Image (cartoon, rainbow, N blue to C red; front, top):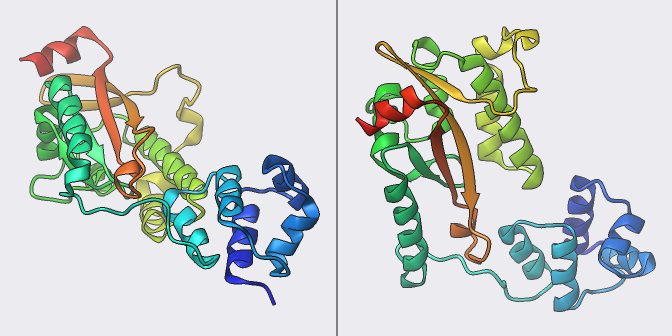
Length: 253
């Protein structure tokens, strides 16, 4: 009978589109032993679970789940946001955002919720969804009926592509899938003329209309490379930069 670990291993192998031979080569093990692990005829060591987790590029939370299923304690911590151990991480986020001001900067969790932002970002959010959701996808949907984002369809299509890529990388996520479904079902996305959306541009900005001002911004997304906490390690910092001098002067004012 297949073990819980074997089922998890097989599911993730299929998500990553590996054959047993592909994965065995990636993990530097025999395909026969991998087959035994999947079928439950063999039990993995802790080192083998970690080796396979690395070969499959499992998210930290999924690696913890695989370890638990195999009878081992989790490796990656899951701390509260105010845990003392995360104080340097939170300070690093605040420093990045503050130093990027007056240009918009957000810190986002796995589900695109804004967990921190600077003054420039707060101004954009106030224009887009005053008193509304603190989630970038929900804010994008909320602006569909406004004239705030000039290239709304283009931004929505790119955001939907990002969401779907993240869902694949995570091996599925109900929250992200629900957001992707809401965005994909929006009337403006359904009616978007893909022939008019140029995805071959070197940089695809978000173009805001604020009064008489046309603001063109592109994003740089940063993540922590060495933070082992399951939640903090998924935090993304999105920094928006001006595409032209007029946009830079607007925010500097």
